[in-house]
Length: 273
Image (cartoon, rainbow, N blue to C red; front, side, top):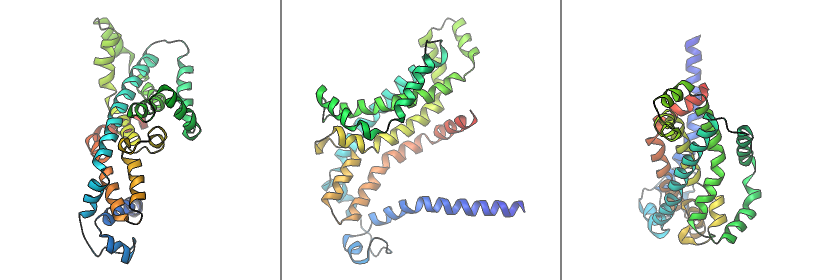
């Protein structure tokens, strides 16, 4: 009976996994098909051709390299600043008796509950008034501002549950708050930082809403809105659009594979807590 249940579970999980992966495989297959093949047989048909020219078109004609560099120029600083500021804020709120710290945490969390759509016009107007409209600096600031509250809330939970004896021992040895933060707290929260880093990299790199809100020039567009423009440039060339999508997915896939071990352990710690 147990063996039957196990087999049924594996079959069910296999089907769910296939349903999850099938659209990705479908896009990859389309990306290697020629325009004539797609036009004659449709997107849902079996491939009758194989070509790399779609990737050349997406890379050169749509200038996807520039778009990828713009995305990385926004994502990397935004992730570093967000996690750096969030970890210091979480450290102070979790390890020291700060007045109204619970209120501060609730305000940070409430800020993330606001639908971003209602803030599009205020944020766009504010960025324009400050003179940073249509700059990557504005996009970095927007992502840091909107991610800071959530990251602080998550890291606060990890740091709060660390044994107080560790901090007390470091204090007895003469370590100050900065030394304790850098040498004791941060290494212990590395799985959580890695998990948040992988998630925030994916969220920021794939962002579309804020990119088209504060960026106007085509040469400054990150990769996701650039793909949107690719759809307008190649109205029926879905194979080129699919190739551009596959190229755009490579950086986030590489980050996940790099931090997979820490990402899984961070999620496991969160589940236990």
